[in-house]
Image (cartoon, rainbow, N blue to C red; front, top):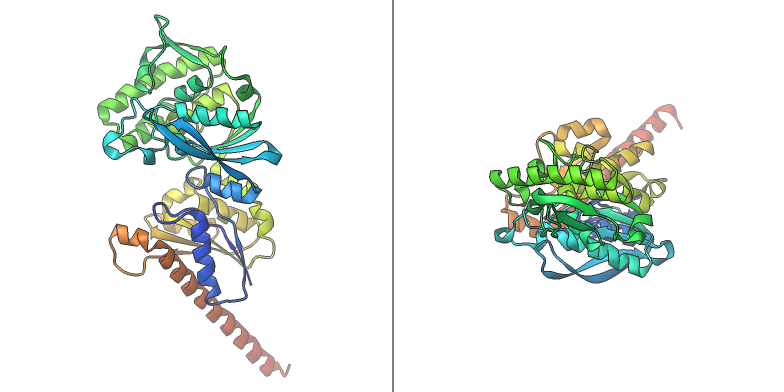
Length: 393
């Protein structure tokens, strides 16, 4: 039997690679000789670099940059020298996980460190980029990133703006004359699992601002500031991008990429699946195991398990998804090609213990599913034998 193991990370519990290893252990406890093909997945957020570096045979590079609060931090990204390809997760430099909850202020948080990562990769020789937009702490429309790459942002008096989204309320001009020409000529694939525009009820600030610590007053302040930014960005870049799907990803970072780079916005899971050659690896598979920390109705919004299920459906391969939590609305996924949705927690537990026990729970759940599959195979063989006896074969 051939199993393709294509999970995303189970946040705060295990990486995608660790999840794939746990699934394999569970499978081999029942089918010791099974062929298990590990293909760790991601959707543009956490795990994107790891999945793509593994798939492309690249290396991890560490650079000294600023985090969202301007503090020094060492951030890693992937580099594939043979392809002049850099793989960057925005969260490595500007991630919310780098800032303690008490210190989070999206009004002053900056994407400057993301621009520093791009510069480091350009210095290394990168001419192609994949940038995952998940997990950011920022809401500055990518202004900090543009600044790090040589753009100047001025107020009406010709003074440089301070970092952060709130300062954009005073923005008058974005001077792109000093913008790094290497960044302009490089090709960028922007991997994102959200399609929000920059502004409005479904935009960057309204939807994601509260998750980053913005209270109602800060949400209003940042929305007004990004409205100014959108107008000036359109005038000075020559591209109006605020209403485009994905412009609001990572606190509006998507808008800066779409306006100032040769950039194409794509579903993150599609980018990773393509890089990992998932569809080719599905050839001859009997089952696909996927999963992530939580599966519910929101999985339909481009999350990893859905992308994997769509790819498997094209090859006619059954898909079983595992999750720490199978939540409301998950039943709609049965209409999208999923064969089964399997919660991995087997007993009552508080969250810290459930996260710590994640790998063991996932291994146990995979083994249980395989025992059911083995029972089905045995029953099928018995029925076949009985049919043979009945016909005298």
